[in-house]
Figure 1: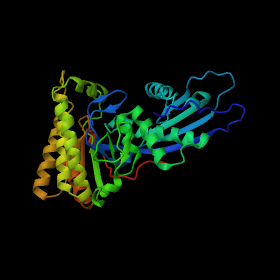
Figure 2: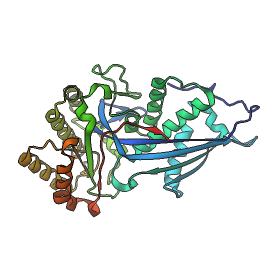
Figure 3: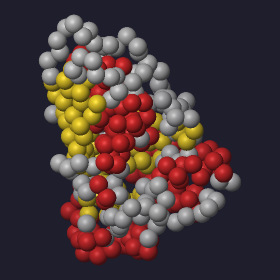
Length: 362
């Protein structure tokens, strides 16, 4: 889609070394995408809220290679201030895959320093924040060198496209407040190739929403998301699930537009449990929920029934529980978390977050 062999630097014109830094957030899907095809393309559209506090800072330095060096990616990489061979290999492979899009990367010596505002092992979607931050750095680099991404909408679209190639959900982190990824007649301009913003279509109440993440386990998941997506290909309920997601997306968009928090909450919870039901119905089946995940869910339901406060849960592909609620009850909910829920968290760890304004160039 974006392959451009003309993006080559003129070696006769000296290039001054430079640097770019982006901060990009994670996101939490309300309508889940589970099942993909091709190169990171979704079987159903998804909708997420963009977070604020759970983010990745990525610093990219570049300089021209010495004359005679080959055109392979040359990368010096560190994560959280230390070498990380596994991450370095993943980023090296990702950048190599982008050479048809950015052939000039093969002419540069690259240094990438990256780190999260949250523990990598905490079960928060660090691939979404990390790959979106890197994609934004690459688009800024292209624009600095060639002035080809002057239009902000095209810049964001290309950054979302590139982020998707690194991690599907990362394409949604490019945009403030809320984004939809996946082609649907409900959202103009929507695509399987990149996400589109829908923050201007949601009620002000949802722009002040909180997402407090209860870290039930910091251990590595028994089944990776990549493997889980692949298992949807043989899941007997897959087609019904994809149709269900499309129906729920229509209902959710209407709830977001009108400020219907109760409908939003019901869909969020139903989607979370459906996601894990798909895992249990896979062959082989697997279970990522922990006993403490279920205990928290029951506590949340009891609290909502007793107080009437609109506090809802959702889940990613793991055991950790996200609490979603409007900002005007933050003090009551934080007290509830401290009193009744922290005991179910790994070392009492809770990541407090909220709906945010999207990435920021530093």
